[in-house]
Image: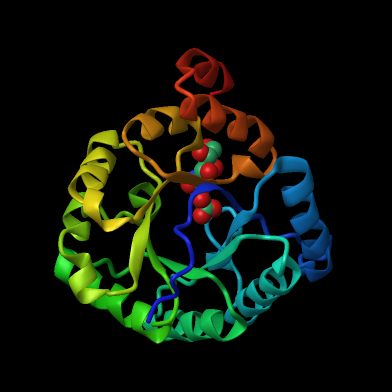
Length: 246
Ligand SMILES: CC(=O)N[C@@H]([C@@H](O)[C@H](O)[C@H](O)CO)[C@@H](O)CC(=O)C(=O)O
């Protein structure tokens, strides 16, 4: 059973992976990083080992250790730690998903495989559902980033009936400028209490208009406070002020 934890919403920082000058992961900075996000930026959710964190350029062992450090350092400080476990190898994805569950992460996310690409929705779902099942106690998010994966299957098409195949499906991280596709995803899944997390920070305000429930992005590492002001302005329908913050 996927955790009944509250829906992922608000700002989620797509974390960078701190490195030493010698090119090794600097795990020792992650504790300070957590405090900085919470205290200086007002951001209490993180998306680890994604694009910004260069997860796909790290070894599996580094990815595991980075994930462990975020979960451990974020305990009682962060609301949610979501680990990106996408990989070209299904086996690696399964390993990372199981590991995320073991260490007590709050969710996993997966991008489409991007070298041997799924050429239709069913093939993509077959990949995603195996990974989701490897961490069946965790909420599962699909990470849609077609400009980088080259997988152009529309998110709206993918979401149609997805919970039938992936009962732990809890939402979408949508890193694309196609707001028609995004809006259709929101519109067609209104009853399902899913998270619709937008990933093009520069046009978040437009995505909020289309029904985004939150955002995952790199800029929330340093513009979290400012973007939270935009979310607050949007919430109170002060669109002119929201636009100023965008
Ligand atoms: C292509 C890319 O890196 N997009 C970023 C955005 O936050 C992006 O950096 C921002 O909109 C600035 O261009 C995120 O969508 C990626 C992300 O959330 C991640 O690191 O997984």
